[in-house]
Length: 122
Image 1 (cartoon, one colour):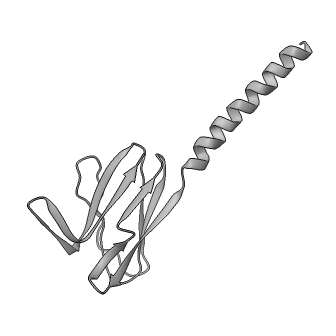
Image 2 (cartoon, one colour):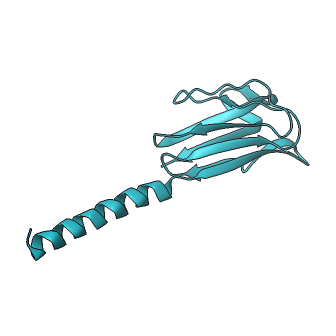
Image 3 (tube, helix red, strand yellow):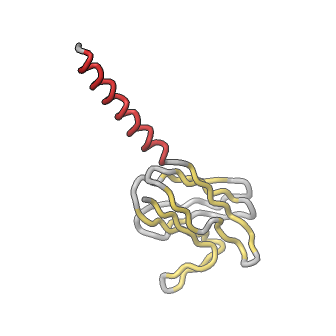
């Protein structure tokens, strides 16, 4: 193997490593907390924006809650989870994923009020 071909192979290997590490670094874990506010129970933050491949963890800080998907592009329906409990989901495709706690929200004419949230992936 010549010096030039070793150099090309080394550069190629470095580029592949950078690309792989870059995609792993963009995916992360994000936390959404169920909190009691002056307006009642709410998800904090209400909207979280994440990279494709990221994991979102919902933690029940105050009270008992559930996470139920309200958009058709995903499926999530937990049972009731008590204080300190968590549930998680890894988002593999770009899109907007809506959810709510069925104990502390209402849906009327397609609009969710109360403990409603969304994850924006992309």
